[in-house]
Image (cartoon, rainbow, N blue to C red):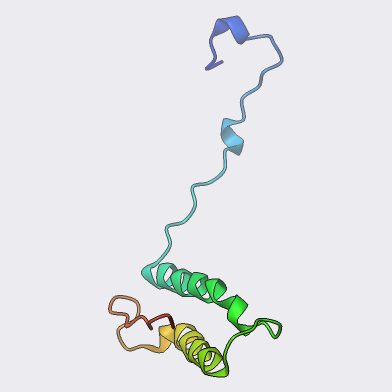
Length: 88
């Protein structure tokens, strides 16, 4: 046992062949899309009907969120992204 002879017959067993696989490395596309999805999640609250937010501000957030959803359509994606500015 890798624990040493002192632990040999104590009911321990090794699961080396069952070790989880290393996670696959994410592609740049996946990383940037995940970033966009996180930004969308952060602004989800602005789209709830019971949130008191001015109509103009809601429209600004709708445009911001649309640009985030369309981020993969940019010609420079994923290496040259023009991130939309979050409404203030």
